[in-house]
Length: 299
Length: 331
Image (cartoon, rainbow over all chains, first blue to last red; front, side):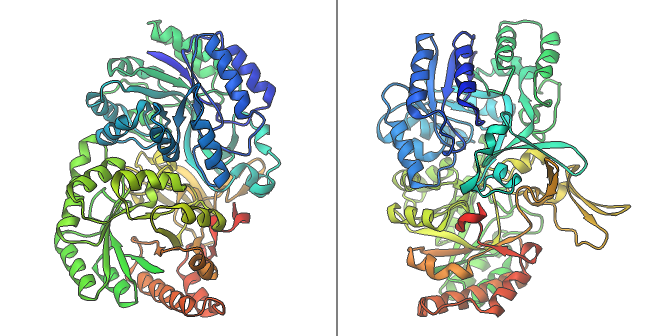
């Protein structure tokens, strides 16, 4: 199995982003997804910067994919997306059907991200006919469904699984980070930059439940598939995606790299958990609530 | 502007038709639609009556088959499409690309609408569904401002339907996993958000707690009216503040902007609420009918009456309404 680094879901300072990808250049992940997928107002790193980072990573031997915005609202966002999709250097990860339309019309191969709803074989086959080269299993689908889909997977299509990260659970017109500062979205003052792992939302009895990341809502727990690595490998998963967190991603990639080469998980799993901002969950894989954590192997 | 109203059972369907709905949308008794609640929706027998009741009175009947099948259940979604088609419904409301592919191939003459659950917010996205499946209408998610809706309509290859009244999803539909994260039951695959099976009301020393699969969604003080624990409408703590961090219990109400919706070319107005009572359907349909008629008659002098606002407020979540994302400051 290959390892990929998903797009940074948060709004990081420009230097933080650049430092992160300098580190990534030397890591063992084979694929790197670049770009802003959550909010079009986050412009500290622009398309030309992403292209420059992409070229450097390609020089270091990485496969580079440009990730697109997930929720499109303004016409200007569709124009930016069109520009992204017309780049001739890198493949694009479509996170919305709008990008699929641009890419398939242009006859370009593409990847679909976790927010494109591929829930069954017929959808998978249809998109394969449009140029789908790799798809990310929607995060709420489990091993059973993955097994069924792998059995009917069209020739030449690769499967990627969201393997580590706070789960992208929802997108809205409303910016919740701005709201939590009592600011409207149009005057958000870029508050997201203060929360490089998102802003914690707790229940009234202090359960750390969700994380606010601008217009996106995430799980507070980090989804981790390490306990099910053997099953994922047996099901023929091609790529495991690691979603960047504010710190510790480098070591997390090393742990996954060791694990895929057969290292003993008993010490790796506790170390991995110690690197997470809060804790682990994996319920979705086992057909349970996504927030649950179960160490038993799938049936 | 066509008025499209919800019905979760035969009495609701009759209420919608009798009170002036142009079209009524329904679902079958299983997970093939996004209001999969116990005791709700149509069996073979009631469905046949529903089709006849609507058609005898010159109204249209739409069937929502708007959840996302996994491979093992795909046959159920096909059966729902086939059943609706065989009974001669006026349109199917679909979301999943695989189901759209099946329906357009098996029933090429049947009119297909793209469900809000397909989560499409751009004209290019609509074009994908139009070119591949021949959809003839799209229902837009509740995430666009009026100016963004205007933009989409100006470039859309098919007519556009928008939500006019009802419970408000604040997350883009079809891509919201909050409820499945907490309960394991997904609106996308199971057809219910914050399902009743996972809800608990608990009396405490100082009031009432409402929980969803154990997660505290809200706490109500003694004497405060406890609402249903819909996950996105609870009070949570962010920083030092406890508040409705995502959204308050509130319903969408577009009465005040109907002339604008007409002017920008909205083709149909949808009322949410297949899970609500026949009385709700009757009341909301009657108000929306009167409002749309008044608006079409003379959009310049149109004003929502106090009576309409009061009636819709009375059947709204938390007895309050909002323009939601249509109104930029809400965002």
